[in-house]
Length: 421
Ligand code: LLP
Image (tube, rainbow, N blue to C red; front, side):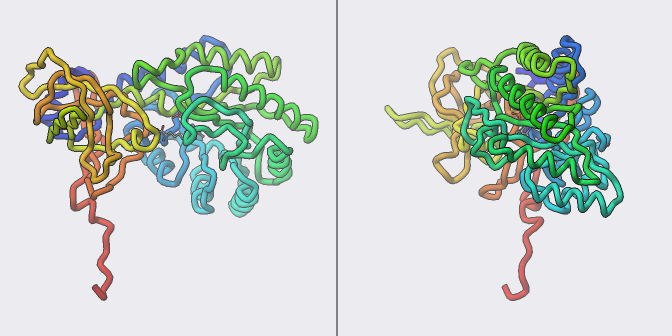
């Protein structure tokens, strides 16, 4: 098995396990696929990488080189992007509870726009912009009342959501009214994010029609129009053979067509914010098998040197993955066995893959879990005080560390001992 032209066993020998490996060409290919999909429609568009999927400096730089804008949701993500050299004007800030400090930092940095999520934030932004004698472009985030088919924890478009201004009851219209009246705010556009790991265009098409309704309502009530809409991220990827996401080009074509029908000559710029679909399939996590427990008639546990600390998604969302075995002695047995790949954290829920068929596994073999680029390193923790793995970028037969492996010293770096102990 090779990634980016390098045998996985070479990467393991160089960097150890557990190891996140990111295939740079695969990231670039996804960025280009989105560009091609929009370019084919002829509309004006803006693709932002939702950096929450994996926010490290190297990735921020790669997506910026691929002419993507960037969505950040915290001072930490903003700092990562700026320190990677991303142009502030191409960054926008999200968040359902941005602190005054985060808003101030973003405005000072000169981000392209801020997506507002609640009424107090409109006031805070107006105050900050006035204190700095500048104007701030804002998008109003709608909660469009669209219920996507995905895991409840990653659905956001439904009315019962902590995100955005509900369309229902005129709440979103009131937000737009307050923005328009604020002397230092400019209403840049309308934003929605419906959910994540969506398989087809249907929820986007529905969302576009809700946005168009809202834009008409704004025009009628406030006499304002907007030049920019953003339909968020959510483009699903194939983790296992049970996932069948539509092709990016089909989804983009359908959502653009819906916008063209809804807006006609007043077609705004269409923005999207893909995270998972940019980086998910480009990532692989490589582990070493440390223990095998065969419980006759029950289950065979293959335990690896990572787990829910580097990939909490199976435990959190019941997410499924594909895995491959790399035999230590390079000799793969032809018989397969069904095993459960468990992590080394002290809890039973720490299972990465359940009932997966692999060639006979031995201690010291390596297991590669595919499609771990999105929301794995980003959500990693130090539970049980495990140091987080390194992240390595590979491209054309060359590899380089983009996040250094943590050590046990890193794990205690922020601990302090009060004088009375
Ligand atoms: N835009 C907004 C406003 C979002 O909230 C999100 C994701 C995205 C864009 C990017 O969505 P994507 O294209 O990556 O689906 N931790 C969960 C995913 C949470 C997604 C949160 N928001 C997981 O591991 O599945």
